[in-house]
Image (cartoon, rainbow over all chains, first blue to last red; front, side, top):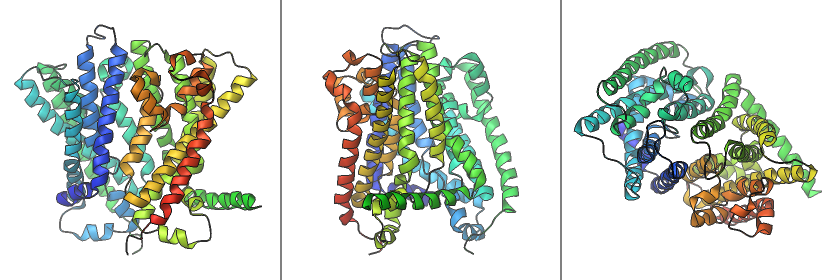
Length: 256
Length: 269
């Protein structure tokens, strides 16, 4: 399933190339915006221009890998009745979908890498403050990936009840683009907004890994953020299990 | 006479499409919210950014929000009647377009009435709301002429987005998948057209006036209303005429679409 997922991304090669080119343009524009916003200004909330620019670049790339538009084939499978065949496979449905999603993610990794390379070329990237921060940010990225996949799958599950899922998926997509800190880092949010965002799983997807990588969150605080990620993985996995248990009774095979 | 029947056909097909979408009631509400969330997060972003930094390239929140509102209202004028153009990729890839060609109705008309995008109603809601709120807050002394210009500008902006989308549909006949391009166009317009576009430098600005004519959507007409045309590296009369770019871009897009349509090949053959 994973391999099929990767292939489903890689097969439209033209699309992938335009995807890469357009990501580069967007990363460059995002960098320009932050540079202009900061022009002639010292650190804001203790964050200097370089850090803010690097954050914008990395977050845009991470976001494009984590939240593709066509992520899961689950809603489509439910709608056209394919789900019946999927349910008879020896591997559980959840694992099939997660495998496929993971494949899509792998297929999109080169995109993210190209975006990062472009940011590096125009001097917008920064190295992490040390090996510790770098390694921890890798762990946090993995954590972010798992949280993103679980959230996505839970939202897709809504299809079992409503058949159409484009609405919830879009609310989720844009909600999480903002709440995960990929549009604007949590540092710049007003206090009330920031404290509410910290209670949601989204910051684990983008803000946690990037702020650890840039050394904005260090030591005990960084470890705490990773621990929060883990907690979310557990909570979301339980939630998914619960939703799936109920969904199973709701399966309607269309066209069968 | 022919014109009339064209409109009638549109109304009949669009009504059927809307009915089909209204079947799923939960989806109706969540999709409506999707439209609001999509654009709302962008407004929230501008709000948070400008609350922290005050101005971007000399433009404060009232100005930026006004451009944003104009853009959103234009966007609604594109997605409500023409939003279904986004599905063209799918229709061409699945060979569904064979059926479109068999019917005695203009193919373009069939494509735009393919499915009614409920999300567009969310866009319209937010767009009209934002335009009413932010045009009052913008530093503009409104009179009848300026209001008329605003309406023309919003209409023109909608036609530009429609023209770009139509162009991509033409491209679909040749390259099958234009998904990334569409998303790029859409998200670039969403993310960046609210800023004073001259801030990206002259070359990029000219690109936004030609290759990817996003500057005409709301930025150029907004500089007229906000009395900031001196910031634009274009002759003033040209900036003033920017609402006319809409029909031009749409005509070009449609010409390209018609020219590429014969190159459609059934995927099964």
